[in-house]
Image 1 (tube, rainbow, N blue to C red):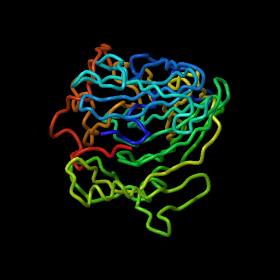
Image 2 (image 1 turned 90 degrees about the vertical axis):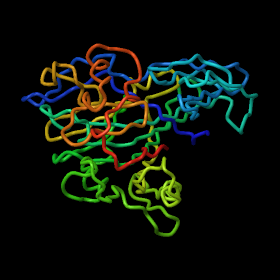
Image 3 (image 1 turned 45 degrees about the vertical axis):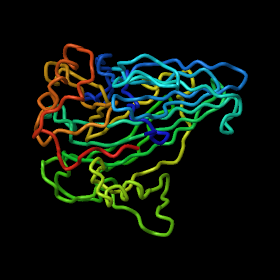
Length: 356
């Protein structure tokens, strides 16, 4: 099957992180490259307006579009690709690989100097410097799309957020930043993403029937607010109603934020250009940021995962839920550790996460 234009890729992590010290200033902290779950891939084009498409195909054969461009482009792809890059005619069976499709100029009315980068990920955060590292204090599905023209023209970033779980009691703000500065999407995830509900949400291994973001049923199905639209995920709701065993049981909507200018262009590496973070009190935790208070100085405060995976149950460290995680995070052992999980230690309300 072919997914929509949004991939299961991670938008990837940051290469610079900071946490405020007692004086209120930011200090740079160590960032370890192996925390990134994606790597760069240079998309080549034939020129003269010809269009190149890049698809990611996972081991189950699910195909998703990563980029469409008429100009040379740098994108992020999963770090643990197993297969070779192949033509659209077909690739190795049972392996994760990239497929390339070539089209003549003007394909699908695509501009000869246009480009699109589309990525999505599961973001999993710890909200304390002394946490339990179950990575379920905040779990979100996010996706972003950058559109632009030419090789240097700044693109426009559109962001989508789907709330999944909230395992922390701290007040949490969520946002992203690039060379244009900080973009706070919400200063209170509990209020805006989880309808103000108190307590822990979707992290104990029971089905409480809670829907994080309530489906919108007014008029055209959407509510337009200042800076974002709450979108009713009708396709997902229909999947659940039909009893699809592979459907996600969270049937709430998602948040689509208005496009804003971004410094991420065709030549920039999104892992450097886009940095997700949360704020709790005076601390600011980026994806992939660590400091000496993390276990063995290794475990990051946030993860951006290239696959849709199950999050850990409450107070279960992720290295117990996914045994390969420890080897990957500490030893840098290559391979997709998300494929091996321990039954009973994952949140089993979902048979599978909703994909974009």
